[in-house]
Length: 331
Image 1 (cartoon, rainbow, N blue to C red):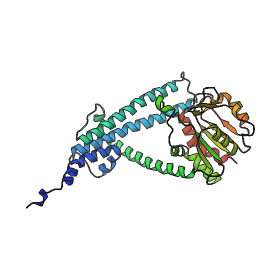
Image 2 (tube, helix red, strand yellow):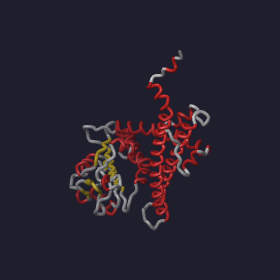
Image 3 (cartoon, rainbow, N blue to C red):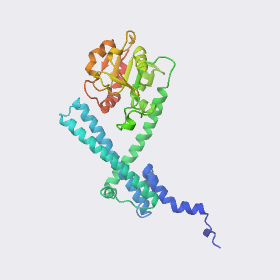
Image 4 (cartoon, rainbow, N blue to C red):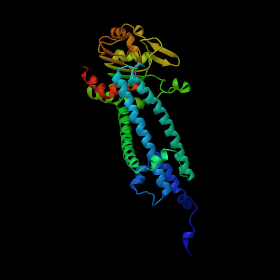
């Protein structure tokens, strides 16, 4: 008697579903591993197609990342968001294209996962043709491996940054204050959504690392922005970064959305500013319209402000190219 006839039900189910499970896993980063294992059209056309299709989606991510960086560089080069500037117009157009690309990527990703689980081979005009091009697929494979390596590195940086910025019982030397709300431009989420704290330690990692090198462990405080924390920061800190939006009144920054509160130079009381304060960076749009007032109430600190609409790209570039140097130069 052939014992192979009596295959357990679960083993039969796994054997039938294995290609579908692997195909669906392609959309969660398994494609490079399957490519390395030798999956190709001669072995399993269905699985091979989903490997190629998922890699094609990484090309959309490449476009999104590359143009996002390009937009930041254009804004940084112009030094303003004046709508009459050709570079600003180009940056705006790229942003609109990026939004469309991102939505297309989400739809294509969802179609791919559904098709993989349903045992189908999806076809989307243009995208499926790209997936069949060997040259683009080879490039997308290298790009996907690079992205996964970077993602692994970012996880390490985020964890290390969160560890370095652990709460301390003693006053900090560096304060990074971030607004609660104001991150997603949708009415139902704009005021309520705030990224988790570890994303802030990731974004500001060069400053967090430099501060610990310069002043030692426990020298960094990352806190949600409020009037109380801002007063504490300028009273105790040497370096303060206020990551907020501009307030309704020019020259102010938004300290709270629910309820709405803004903070002006006139709100700084005598004795609030410590004599050790050396550098304050305001990311708020138009806070620079009262730069002289900010410099007066925050003296002797050097104050960085913007008398225009400021862009998140330029703050990111400043943090990663200049932030650590500024921290090391502070006595």
